[in-house]
Image 1: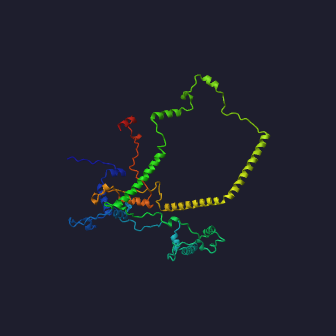
Image 2 (image 1 turned 180 degrees about the vertical axis):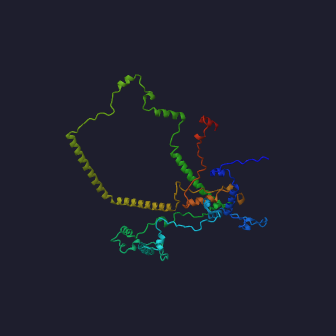
Image 3 (image 1 turned 30 degrees about the vertical axis):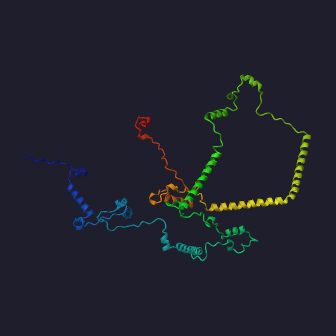
Length: 453
């Protein structure tokens, strides 16, 4: 048996000592010891932490399902995941038991501490000034506090001038001046809109349908409904006929050939070449017509003294004649005073009638549906069935109206919603698609890609 000699290695430096010395068992031991310090040893742990009792499926508690709202609330109570790395999960005790914990001083003043525990004279004086300010503020707020016990009728109309004595005397102070004074001394009143004092519409919330629209109406009710529909249609036809009469029927009808001839004739007016009046010799035509400049020279013709004198005399005569006519008219008007009085009374009566008519129109407009938007409200068409379409029983009735549409139109009539129309299905806009430069194949033309698409 031959004995092998151990290779002698120099362990002069730390690197060579680590390289040629096996210390794995020591490192494993130290690592195991550190792990026990972090998570604890098995001897220190309880049985509940190490073992788990197997429970049968019947005794298992029912899984509680949480809603999305409950899940969000539960997650809000948990600490954020971003701070999980900062938590100390190790069970290793602090090697230095006595540590000098230094409290970090906050920057700036601590106002709360100055108010609760004032130390300097300046802080004590500031607290006194603060209490005086709050006392004044509380008194001011108590004065402006509204009394909730209503002792008077808030809807009762009162004259604003009664708030200040002496302003209601109309002989000395006019109403406008009194209102101006009250507004400047802080006792004026805001103007209330007239629409608050009256109803803006006479439309009812629920209007019963016409008895003629029933599935089994009486003869009179059905005839009344037909007459109302016929009168509405007659008005519509009358308007259409009027528009046709004042537009289409006003122009004479011509054929296409005649219209083309008229168009050519209209375009060729003023040009002798197109009208067929071209002269045979152009030079002769130029010689016949004398040359005339566009702006003719102005002749300075001065009036003579005789002409000026006659002009003045004519002016004086015309003024005298005008005055004589006015005097003659005044003399004639004296003899027809009675007739003039009747004409004035008739004109006044016409103005009164016009005022009454305008008031009635204004009163009617107040109760009509308002134009809240671009369109004006129009009464919907009445649902009607002809005598041969009447069913007589609910089983064979044709559904014509809709409860939802009826409520919607009622809201528009009562000025709750603006009038609108169904615009139908809108076309989706065309999207222009193209290939980005970064996604194009090198050396391939755009037109080739376009053909592929």
